Length: 428
Image (tube, rainbow, N blue to C red):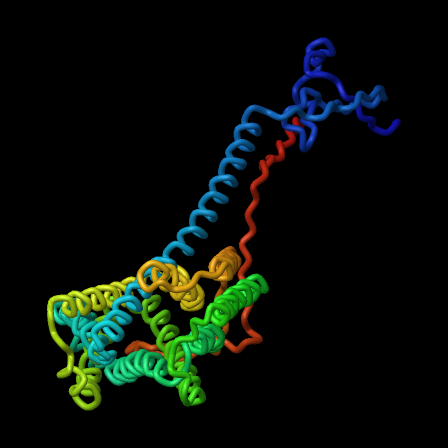
């Protein structure tokens, strides 16, 4: 008996040969083909199968994929602009803080940085600490104090002294030195985020950080060229050390804030900062600044300046956790580099500062660095050797597997059209 051979016959010819449906099987992988395969011992004629044409369903799916891709690109671009814009709102609030402080110190000779911070902590206490006090259950003020009081106490002291050290440094060093050395908060935040929050950065993030710092250096160079090195400049070493100490404390405070707002709540962080901040800043005010406070020539203008300062500071503290949760502590500190430039642009009209084109170059350089940093998201390393959490869990401790036992979890997705294999029909 000769071997069976393959015969390809169009569908329309199946009735002419009087063949039953059981002698045919659809070609595999060609859903749109109109050819059948015939097994017959006496026939050795073949006809090639035409290439399948795209169906209407396939074209609709393809258009939907293109639309989804364009929509995701639009959402990514919108998120990028939103991240940069939120950081600039914080910079504008810091600009308002700087302007009101400058008017108080230079025009009215009211040098009361501790009292100004005390007013902000009192506002945080009245709004957020009282909110915690009226809550029920585990989020109540007493329940939080019972579990984590000493941690928030340390964090409150760190926040108070960070503000005090940077303001105090202006009495010993120049404005340019403060602006440059204040950038030390960025590497502090990066290192703490790397080791404690397990944040991992990509090459584009480091490029964006370097570009931002270059823009800050350009602004400091412009200050030197126009002679805007304000400050006594005496005992510069002491002033520089104060700035570095304040920047380090700022970095610690910001990283702790990022962890708390991501894992606990924004209201809890602000309520605890308001509680311990008002307590310890009040003690510091009574010891160090009570004489300066008595010398203030109180009138309605000074009152408005204190109100404006407190409003900007309260807005900064209330809004910063939102931005940190949306972006990160590193991105926020990069965004705050433009605050000095906003103060400078306002000073051109209010205090008649000298202008230099390097200021504009510095501003756009920092913005380019921000866009580069925000263009790609960071990721968190899934390391079982994780740091101790800020909270004190009351549940049972679960042993984590060793590093060698971890297996990655990969999810595969496909955007292409899935073709189903058509079954064979066999007749006995």
